[in-house]
Image 1 (tube, one colour):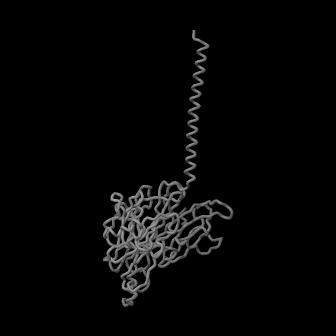
Image 2 (image 1 turned 30 degrees about the horizontal axis):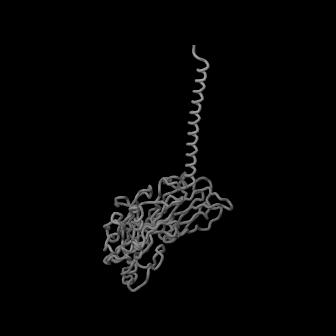
Image 3 (image 1 turned 90 degrees about the horizontal axis):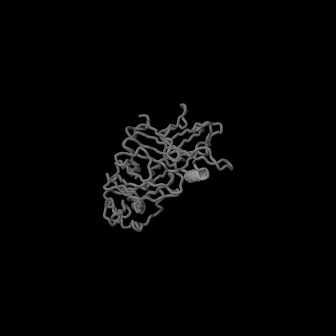
Length: 407
């Protein structure tokens, strides 16, 4: 069966006081960005006249994916900029839904000043890109492999796990259609692991961090989950918590009160979580748990397991980490792994979460405040002038009446 796929692109611009609405990347029938999803490659062609204004962008200002992959070398006379990467390259993420494999990435246009100038004349633009491959049927044009594949290869393929992290609607019934929020809203997140024919597993959210870019090591950052499953964001003025009971051992849901970074002009955040699994029959412990803080009882409580596994959340003494929690977990080869009684783990990012009504430039807010003060001063001055004029006119009439009495 021939390869088929679906593609979804939306165009987001920021830099103002509100979210720019979605708009197609076409003008007068001419595509500005063309994406081709092949069996193992992603081809992206970008018009140098990206904004349709006649001002050409520079290829050096374009990158693809979280790892900032650069475009192919092009001539100055070329009208387009091309990217040609593997589906698994450039930090592209993979998610598995009930009916599709979804590869996600983004095209970034980040203009920088030329030469000694300190200005730019085009906007910073991030274009999310998705390639969807249906899971039904054989998506390869090659012959189906025989059933006598060596046992070791079969076991290895069954061990591959796919981790996912989604924004959900408030009732948890479906994925959230729009990534926009108002400050004060609550984000509903759902972590999943697709196990295939693997033995039953239980999923845990080991660590989560929020950053203004997809790079989990960016600054500033805010830790949401720490210490191997303690939802520490709930310790502050937030009501963030894990949802109990679980929908199933391979799914874990939690809520986070949305926020933005102070003194940061960007109106969006990304959330990166380190997910891991254990055997479903393994009893939760200090290293594998999901604990929420209750302000009413001033205590921690687990989604499952005994309450004492959450006591370490108070001081962060939940085992000794072998590496920084903000780095990607690496698998360790062992005899237990070969028996498939192992802990698989991965970092998964969801975002952007976009905030409406947040001023993207602090100078705009300061300028608006100054203009308001000026207008208020002018109004007060006008009132004072009119009051003084009335007093002067009243005195003049009184003097006229006094020196020229009516006969």
